[in-house]
Image (cartoon, rainbow, N blue to C red; front, side, top):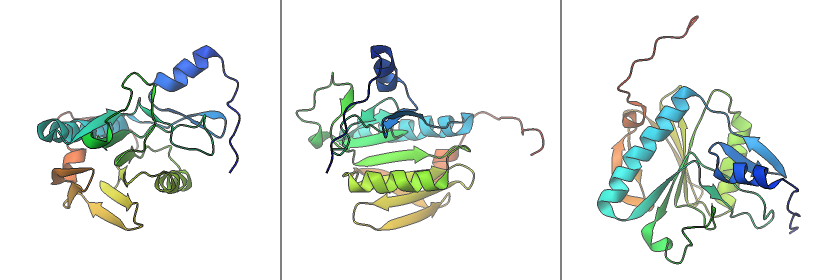
Length: 194
């Protein structure tokens, strides 16, 4: 195993990559995650739904995409920022709440696909998450209104909007229809040419 030297970035660049949503640091490079209005809306909705249950049960904390995870020992400067993440409350004991990064992998990571996401990059990210202790990953696909679930034990599932999704061991009391992730109270006009 080789530990990479930290990259040379200005203090302003480090501040930006550490605090700004949608920016990760991978392979010594700042990587901006593609986003869309739709993926941002769905990500915010998923956070709200998960946070409501986490607050009610007291079993976990839910984090948004501004929290970076530094859990990659082969590259100490690398961090990833899932669109949403959940960590069980019992695992947060001893974590410094003022740290700019989370130093333990989440129990659940959520990635909401945008039109600019490439399938092979998402598969690489899911594999990387699983190899580094992420227990449960949801990959949410707005276009097909589906969720692909990947687990640390190697099992996976593919859910459609009529299916029920649960928080499994990350948030055991959580359950809802997948369609709840895609519900909207606003109506967007149909794009030209659609």
